Image (cartoon, rainbow, N blue to C red; front, top):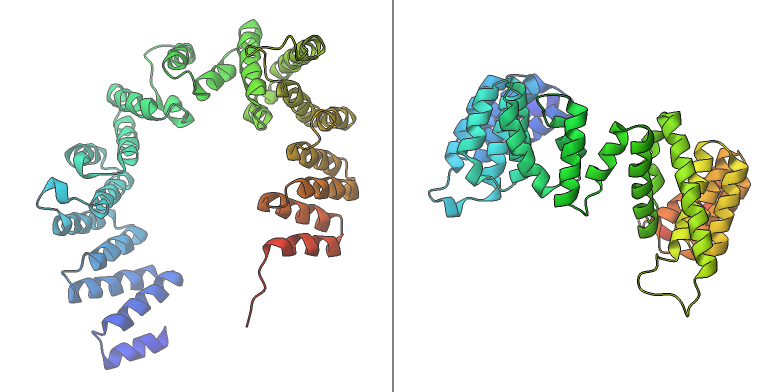
Length: 376
C-alpha cells in the first residue's frame, strides 16, 4: 500500500497504478480509500463506463446508496442505445443493478417505476420480475405482486418461494391448497404443487396425497425421493403414515412381481425397478429412525435385486458410518467406486470414507485417480 502511495507522489495520474491501488484497497477492505481511488479514475477517464460502474460499486459498499443510484443513472445514460435493437446484455445488467440499489435504499415506488420503464431492455427477465415482486410486497401492493407471481409460476412451477409469496384474502393455507390443485392440472409434470399440500394437510387427506406422491416417485425411480419429503418426519403422525403407505406399496410390489411372468407382462405394467426403489426408500426410512439393523436388511435386499446400483452400496456405507463401523463403511464405499470408476463424486466420497477409517494408503490411491501431478 505504501509503495503505491509513494508511486502516485511521482505520477499522481497514472491509471495503472491507481487501478492496482484500488484492487489492493478493496482486498484489504479499505472501502473509503477504494471509493476515493475509484472516483479519481472516473474523473480521469470520464468516458469509460467501467470506471463509473466501479465507483458506484464502491459507494454501494460504503452504504452511500442515494449517490450510488445517481452514478448508475449517469452510467446507464452513457450506455443507452440509440435503437432498442442495439441493446446488449451489459446494458440490461446496468438496469438490474440500479434496481437492486433502489431496493436496498428502500425506494420501492421508484424501483417499481424503473422496472416497468426499462423492462424491454433487460434480457434477464426473471430477475427483473422477482425484484418487482419484492417491491410490490414491500409497498403493500399484494394484488399486483400476485399478477407477477402468476407469470413467474407459469415459467417455473417448481420454485417454492413463488408459492410462499402469494397473498390470499382469507385463510392462506386453504387457498394455497386450492391453488396447488389448479397448478397440478395446468402443470402436471411439476412436483412442487404436489409437494406443498403435503405440508398443509393432516390425517386421511395427507394419507391420500402422500400415497400418490410416493407411488409416482418410486415408479419413476427417484433416488432423492426420501430427501424430498424428509422434512415431513418432523411430525411423528406423518412419519407413521408414510411408513404405513410405503409398506403397502412394498406388499403390492412383492405380490405383483410374484404373479407377473414374461408371458403375462404388458406395456401397462409398473416398472420392475419399483420394488428396488421401495427397498432403497425403506432403508433410508429405517436409517432416519436409527433402526440400523433394519436399514441394512433393506439395503441388502436392494443390492440383491440389482447388484450394479451404485446408490445402494454408497448408502450402505452411510449406514455403517452411522453405526460407527468405519472400516466396513469404507469397504462398502470402495465397492461402490469400483462399479463406476469415472464418477468423480464417488471417488471423492470413497477417499473421504477411507481417511475417516484411517486407511490412508488406500485413500491416496483413490484420490490420485483424479489429481494431476504438478510439473515444476
